[in-house]
Image (cartoon, rainbow, N blue to C red; front, side, top):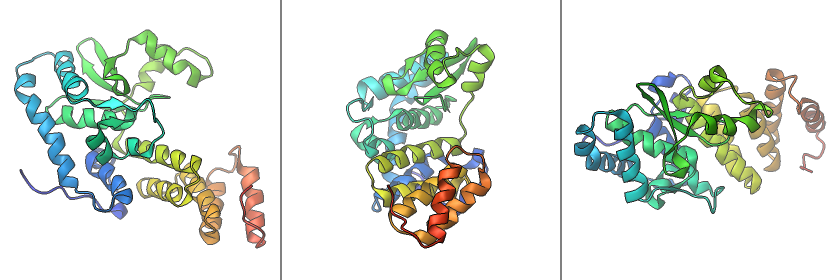
Length: 282
């Protein structure tokens, strides 16, 4: 094996360009918050072993779609990676170490395994921040091959993509241009933020406010001044009685998003906080 994998420093990520932001390393950095003893090399080696197993077969195939079919067959059929349909909101589905070990994940974590293995084999697979479920895309001669990692990498046709997008577009069916825009590749930063937002949602639902605050805090390490993350961290801080932090974050949120639908309610909250009133959540 080559050099040991070094995880980035959280404080270095905000200034890093999207295209140089390391995807696997930062996803493992997210997991290390929950698993402090995490051995990053183990998962780097595992991804590499998946790729090396496939390399002779992939190099013998010329067409991108057939290369991708071979990768999907190995990952989903032979190794048994699959979508966790039974416990979709289990936080382990978002932590890449757990996904590698349990072979279970949510759409975005399974996409990351797919992308990591494909890219090591020279197959330019990108993620797609599709509304609802995260997808992956591969350029092919006549357009795009779009696949669903949560369902074994199944290819999706144009009609199904339109139907999937429809509920998230107010019931409108996207035309070709709108659909192509939705299918734009997701940047590494966008993928990592989506993982963290998923985690925040899970932990807020479970009322694990320290972890909810941490997830929002990590979004802000990637994208300082992201309004939703400031609001989410501020509200989580309220729950754990960190009033100074809550006051700072909610004030900043209202500066950045004065017209937000929840702006009035949060302004009332701040008045209460500044008056030293009860910061209990109702």
